Length: 201
Image (cartoon, rainbow, N blue to C red; front, side, top):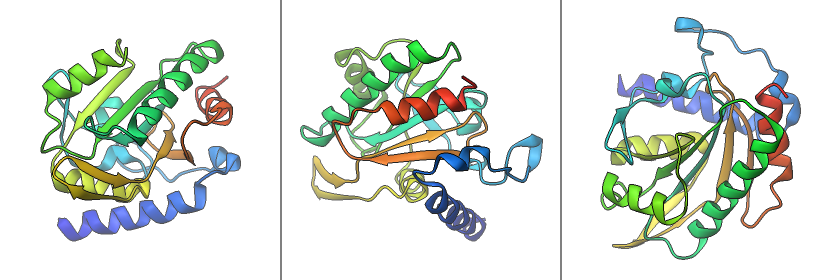
């Protein structure tokens, strides 16, 4: 089972590398697997996650909505606040471009410290209310595997601090990666354009 998951991650990471920052990838036909889900969808990942409200979910539970995803941790005082600001800005702009529901997913790279209670407090402090905002806590292995899929690199440098990549990823409603952008304090208009396009606008 572990080897099959590793092969899946390798195949998905290879596909992502080919798709990153290419608008044309939005029109690529994907082979369908079980239940009509494309083979390279993150909805095939087996891990279970806990939300900021303490609910247990899998990525397949998010099927049907485009996803905008980042990886952060709540104790971060440098890059993560800027990533969070980027996510808020993207959400505000997307609302003006499409009426379709879009999920904004923030995955913790520090599951040891980021309890659901901390994630909920962080969400409230940053004005991230509503069903569109989803904070996820996973297992150490699950977080590492998901980071590998997104090509997000992170390393613990002390008990409460990490160095990490700052990547915003956009998935379509079937869980297939369509676009990534690395950086902080971006205009985000290009990301918004891709989200609106995926949403059918």
